[in-house]
Image (cartoon, rainbow over the protein chains, first blue to last red):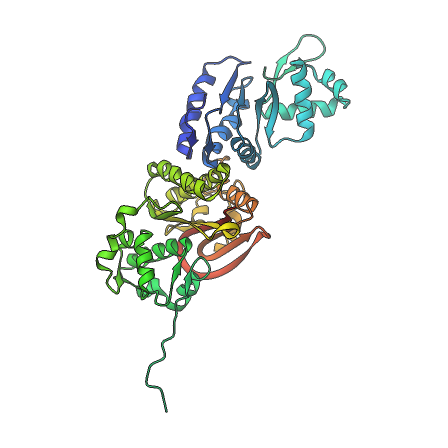
Length: 169
Length: 288
């Protein structure tokens, strides 16, 4: 649970981000860290940029294979977190009514790909290409984008298909 | 027959706000002269209060003994009630002498439901109670609490800019006006620091700004900041998004330029203005 109803300033964002990074440091690939905003009424954009922005930005490079999922966004926090992420060109996974979805700077094709992967939990690029009716090259590009955004994970796979992709779950 | 009475040319506007304050600067050059003549002014908006406070401090920095002439008794009383007189006492002399009036309303500070008095910002620690108060005040003006959160988030963002980029201190004021469908809220915040242009020049990855106008235009774009950190530089962009989304207007003034945005002119229009150091931001939104 993200403590504090009203979260102001970059310094507060930095402090809370460091708390989450401690958890990430101790976690294994596949770990999902959930940030619960149930009690949060409002934050400023410096807080959002420092906490969410830097956390998400560092995730794929510093903590590969770990996931950040946000939940219990409210009528104010949801659109303003989305606006903040859009401004930063970043994407986060949101858990809403039990389902995962992408929030932030994300194209419809990215959402479709993520939703298709989340529906099965784990899949190969050819599987997803078949499911969505796109060619393999296009699917590899989509998955690469989602991988760089830190919202899916990739593991070595046996056989001819080199990789399997997984959504946070 | 010649009239022996010398013709007094009024150099102060009747209303002092983000538009007319620049007329006062142009006509009186008060920062250089050390004299602010408000004779004839009957109303000061939060933007006028903040700009006046910043300009008075700038005049003090020039080793002037600063005088502020306030001929209108009602205005002198307002300046006491809105916190200007007690706050600016160390920086200027108000004439006619205000005497006990300066502190007559000290006990009421923080209690007016539709006003945040002229407040000096000194540290980030002061922000949380100030923002809580802003939310309470706004809750009385607008029925939707999320609108109050919008304004408080912007206030926090702008105050952070003052404290981080504006030399570490500044001023803010807020007031709701009108009634019914014409009710609106104005919030002003400003500093006498280095200004946007000098602040952005601290980032070596940004091109040199040709002038203050170009600096404002650059500063509202996401990612443009004095810092090279990739998550910086979104505050002013978000301010415009929220203010325009509410059907309001905003102005950013720095140095010798200002840009105004309105909901019907979201791309903004710029002006060259008399120089005043630092950055002053004003926004107003309908209160319904």
